[in-house]
Length: 205
Image (cartoon, rainbow, N blue to C red; front, side, top):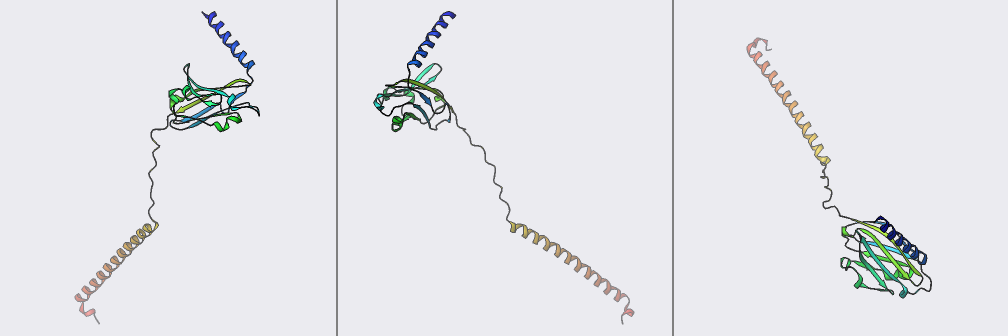
């Protein structure tokens, strides 16, 4: 059993090696890893070698998503024309192809309304009159925060005038208390003196 698996792997390796030897088109992903949030949009882009006299009708492209050994067709271009029927239902209506940059040797795909299930390995294969090539990138879609961070309550400072008013009121009450005590003391002394004169009339000149 082990020997059978090993022979199978060797065969796959030889096929891939043969393809690489035959391939003359260099395909490179502009970014090997992408990070995005659910319900947002993202643009995946690959570049490939071109010639000045290259015709768009000679470009064939197939882009797929691989998840758990299963693949889903994201985008298919045949002879320079988009083939929407090949697209998997999962991506229906969510992929926008920028045809204007194709002649420059760029495959640009905008994936909208992202889902967490869109996470995985994306492979783009390009086939032209010059040969074949491919490259991969990885996309990780995370769920957005359900609840925003609570905001701190805003503390409104008291107006400066209120502080001065409080100070004035405090000083006014203190002055009134001092005046009241002084008045009571004066009245008390006057009452005492009047009582003494009544008791000793001879002391009055």
